[in-house]
Image (cartoon, rainbow, N blue to C red; front, side):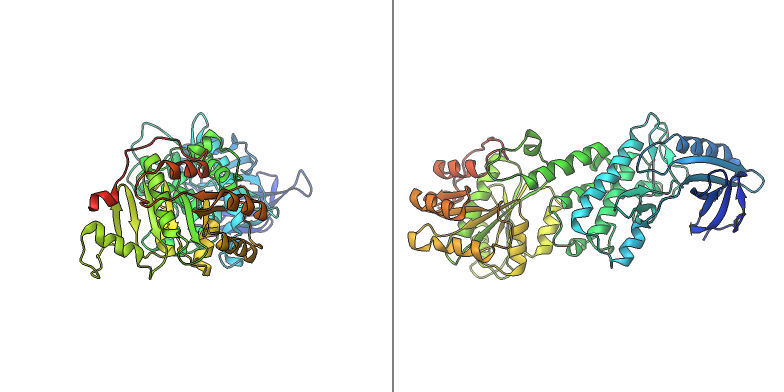
Length: 497
């Protein structure tokens, strides 16, 4: 509740024009009322009453004039301002917006907002933040949180409370008043520096994390990745993680930059097989996921995952190869060889490195989400031949899902069987890899699946080593996504000798 009693009650008239009807809400510094317009019958407004220290009334007046000058479809129009110096009460008259706050919506739907609405909501918030931050005298909102976002019946967003917004003054080192909602406010709002546009971007990250965890978390703490909803677009996670960096210089630097990142990643997600990507998509700085799924035991999924990982490492920056199975043994045996560990004696670390590729053995979904919040350019998931719900979900959500099946004539039907068993699911992104398959087998499978992304993988005895024929196939598979900046050849098995 507002700390001081209100001067208004039912029937009170503000500015000789606005009659108070009822209370809409209240907080520690203000109270908001619905009012009817006596000059425009039937027109309703929201009247916000705040109590200001008479010593800072000039500042309050300047801020009100600034707010009145704003004009954006996702901001309420502020049409009038009144002040009563004896009591310190000030009144802003603004559009009354019909709808429900995001906070109330989340409570009513048990913390669930449809995943397809999260990115559009983020882009709407960024649109208004970009408008505020790029004004001649930038406006910093400083209190982006679910209670200050109104959702209209059409699920459009409006920012409704400018109680602690301020104009950015470049000569200041830090804010004189530390304000904001705990859990959504950036660290610098509590005395470490002046708030600027990056402070609002931190709050956006907190808001997105709140939505992605069903209202459970708004700060990136240990274990939070385990609460992120599994069906959400993967490219959101590294974006949220960067928004929530403690130090402003480590975050995105502008709303425009975040908008570009969201749009580039969305373009990457929606790109159809066979189409070349735009340059913007190739420059996408987020983490992309390649998931390798074997049709059956012995089909070569792990071998292919290793070959793909080292191929990507030779052309891009950091790559992680993740063994998504808590009881798998392949990476443990490999780690024994790499680190010289006695057979059967497990290492205390689940991560080891081979020629620039970080191997993660026996991981869980929570581990994958945590890695997505890091700095890897590519994460390759070795799913083995497991088709349980968890691994199948990761396969379907990947940017590049790779199905690996035997190239033998009598085993090719294993792939068509898998495709038919999952025909209810979208398969346009799938890529089919057939080790040692003949060109006729590839042609026939492409026709049967009505799918162009079917590849024969050549004989490749050492997946750690560069092989020209394998590179040609993978160049085609990843065409338009990575540039050809090849590094030196690898020789893992040769070094072991």
